[in-house]
Image 1: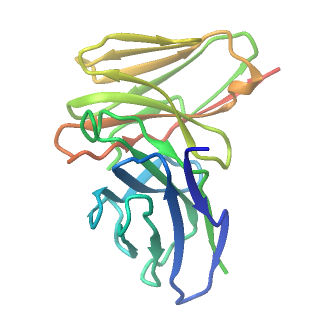
Image 2 (image 1 turned 45 degrees about the vertical axis):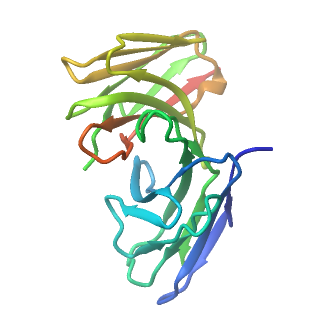
Length: 116
Length: 112
């Protein structure tokens, strides 16, 4: 089946620890995105990438890092510098045929990150 | 900062009734999209309306766009309990380098 796979579904972080969230897509999409969602809130953009080996900061990039070594994969690392990491993290992808904002996003099922 | 603002924040209706959700935004846009999110899940794309369109239909969904008022509405007709979810508008402003910006959502509850 085509789609976006996020793992793990639940993740716990200890104080001072870096954790990495996985996002893989087999839709052959050029663009990939990471969003953070806090309870009862909308989505805020962390990072996005439109091409392999290139990525751009979103609105809340501080305390996060990403890589895009393969078209299919866009992992997100939540570093110890992120002091309030508890949130629901969503990965998405899209084509870029009509321009970055003219294509619909396909979302993964999310990772719930909590602090121990 | 958030581009889209949904109204109301929460809406509770009976099955069979229509549900209307509104979205306002601040800057010029290329298009506006609506998404649905079931609790604890990812978002699912519902409909995209371009800045030169005024109305669009998809099944029981009707979306309108008024660029002069910088607002959009999503109407779900003959609602069902399965429509219970959060609904988000997302806009693609011209000057944001391709980023899609989401509103805070309307939480819809449809009671059987």
